[in-house]
Image 1 (cartoon, rainbow, N blue to C red):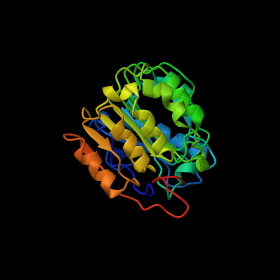
Image 2: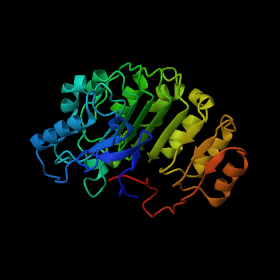
Image 3: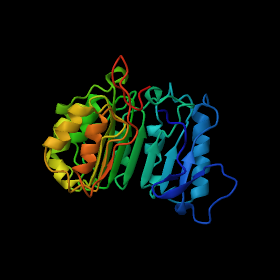
Length: 306
């Protein structure tokens, strides 16, 4: 699978390009996409586009911002500094997607990211942070009282980032989604590194947990079988990974899952028999076992890597 299409909505709002010919009557009624057409554009060009966006959105800036190509995203890291320097002018910002690029613009594992800790520190009112790409991605443990949604999409999420999420204090976070990826692209976390997250002590409001696109999906499933946080969530997502019968059996043998509203296992390597058991033994739960994959000679694979 490749990410070949851009979002049309974000944070529940339709997305409008920063240079669209039509300006919404209420700039706060839409999410704004800020990106350049030229993949080799320089930082000055991107900053000019940013200034134009602020003119169009008015005092306080956009409520929701989707940042796409900022120029040489495969070489130059996401422009954290630009946003941090202008935090006072972005007082309305509540939702941010850092690097919504398709594979044609830049493969997910080539997107240059940065230390996003200053971003969270500069925007204490931020409610949703989505990030695509993990090359150079850094997150240091912190407390953020506003964040409700954290989504980290990658072909390989560094263990240091996973550990930082687990060591952070997010009292209002209701949705956490981590694309763990594969070791070959930097996804070197193991199930033990997820223990603080699975304990859930710093995530008292969590209702939706996604540990997706995981090469170690069987390890993750085994850890979830006894994880305290599972009893508190309504949505559990292990999709896009390399889940096999070993992981499926662990889920069935572990703690009850009948309280869940949904269990997403799509893109998996389960046998037809075990996939059917999961559906039948979890009545009332929306169990998604679609997109069954066939193991290759060299093994199982995630949906997104490069």
